[in-house]
Structure formats: structure tokens, C-alpha cells
Image (tube, rainbow, N blue to C red; front, side, top):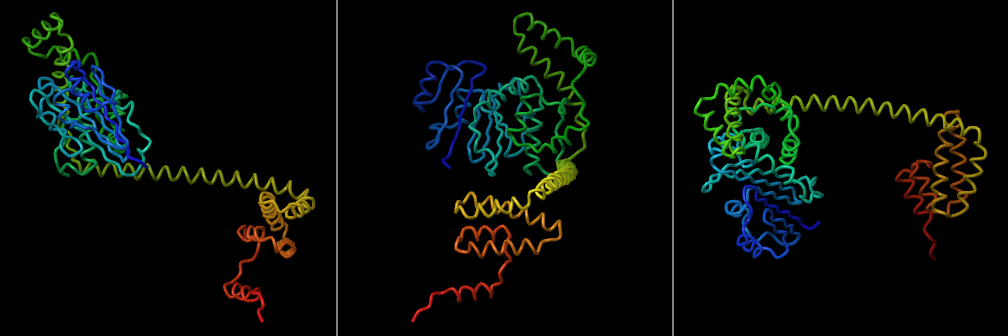
Length: 395
């Protein structure tokens, strides 16, 4: 199978200039390049550029998928909306990193899987389903960051006794983009389930009213002024960050360590697999009983036309057609099973042996008899003796 790589970049906060588009075009003559996107895939070559450098200079989001199992996502934030120290509380391994470049903080999320399950994933559609996480994180909703931390835990990149970062509210009710992010990072569903157990939902209207009322007066005045001046998006994001920061501080008391989370996830996996095995066993019993009942009804009908079926078998093996041989073998197996139920197994064995003797020159037919278990298995000594007896005589 040939290699396949998919690259997609997006500019969110501001469009690319004409000069920037020319610079990007110089790196690829066939990529799709607009004022907000760069998209290309490669089957034999590679991108003539460094994605990290492009994120520093041009773009706010980047996605990469390769058919050997690599998933890579990067998101860029102005430092004023995401503090590097906050990001590093969650991004603590190879699977999730946070770096500061100039006026930006860049988050990088990576997942590798060599099982081959992703060979049919061409990468399209992933970034459109994930890019909204950037706005969530900028607004102080750190559920995506916590998912990234879980991936680091899953991969053994966090010390087993390390302190868990604040667990955001709403972890048990993931949005579609968050669910897509968990799938993109290949986070163990059982690990996610135990991590989100007991975590509260998002604040109610009453809780929100109390939290807003508790904000300092100067902060409230500044936010209202920015709303009135038309800077509503930035003001709303800062307000949500402040409220969620208070929310996260209240939840920064979960004592569970990565070791405890992994142990709980394994216990949950074992219990789930045991339940699935029980259901599968019960379903197999049900199918076996249904098949046995169907088989029994078929043999009852076959008993009423047993003689006719034997004549039909005789006619089939005379034709020298492979498909007829297969049909004859199927019917002989049915006749054998019917005879066993009637206590006449030896009679059927004799009739099948007689067929074998009458049509012994039809080697493919005899081989089908043997593979179907219709003929007795020969011992090695008998096989050797028959081979000697059938050698041509030489003077």
C-alpha cells in the first residue's frame, strides 16, 4: 500500500494576505490555497515546509493525518487568551505539548496507532469538526485540554503519582467536537468514563448569577465597557474564562492520580468485557438452538423424500460438473445425518463407499468426499501401501 499524507491549515483570527498566499504557493503548485486555508495531500512526496513554522507565521489551526496511523493537531492562541502555565498543567507529555512563540501559545496534540485501522482515513473533515475547540479553550473551557492530559496518562507520559489538573465541569457530557477530539486522540473510552465520573454538569442559571455577582466591580465595569464598545466577543471570552477559572479552582481537589485512573479504567474494561462475553455466549446459545431447530425441521422433511434424494445424488455425480459435485456432497452429508438419527449409520457408510468405488476415477469428486468427512480417514501406513500398489509395473 502506498503512503498517504493529508495536510490542512486554517487561518481563523485574520485572513492571509496576498503576499502570504504567494509564499505558500511557492511551496506547492497543486495545493488548495485561499485567504483562510491551505489543503493538500501527498502519496509519494511530502510538504515542502515545516508545519510548526507555518503555525508561527500564518495559521491558527493545523491538522495532519497519515495512513500509517499518525494523527496530529495544532492550535494557536494569542497569549492574552491562553496562559502558557495553564496550558502546561494539562499538556505534559509527547502526546500534548504547549509552547510559546512570540505573542502566541501553540498547543500540539499527537496520536500514533500502527494497527492499520486508519488506512482508510483520508483526513478530510477532521479539522472542520475540531477547530471550534480553539474558541472553547480561548473562552476558558478546558475540557479539550483535560482530554489531552488523559491521552498523556494513557500513553504513560505522566508520572503515576502526579497530581491531577483541575477537572472541568461537563466532562461527562461531551459536545460533538469534544467527542471527535477524543476519537482523534484515540482516548480509551473506559479511561474517559472513570475520569468523568462524579464530575458536575455546567453551572445552572442561579449558579451563574451568583458567580457574576461575585466578580470585582472594576472587572464588571471593564467588561461592560468593552461590550458597549463593540468588543463583545473578546469581553465574553474573558468573562467565561473568569467564571470557569473559579469553577475549576473549586474542582481542583480531586485526589485521584494517573495510577488510580488507569487502575479504575482497567477494572471497568474487565467488567465490560465480561458482560460482553456473557452476552455473546448467550447469543451464541440462542443461535445454536435456532440453527438446531431449523436443521431438525429440514431433516424431518428430508426423511419424506429420502429415496428420491439418493436418486438425485446418483444423477449429480454422473454429470462431471464441479457445482453438481458440491451439491451431491451437501446432500450426502444431510442423508448421513438423517441416517444417524434413525440408527442406520452403517447403511449410509456402505452406500457412500459404493459411490466412491463406482466413481473412483473422478478424483475431484473423491477428494470432495474425503474433505467432507464422508470417507474413513486412512492411516499413514495404508496411504503408503496404496501408493505402492498403484505404481505402474516395469519390466
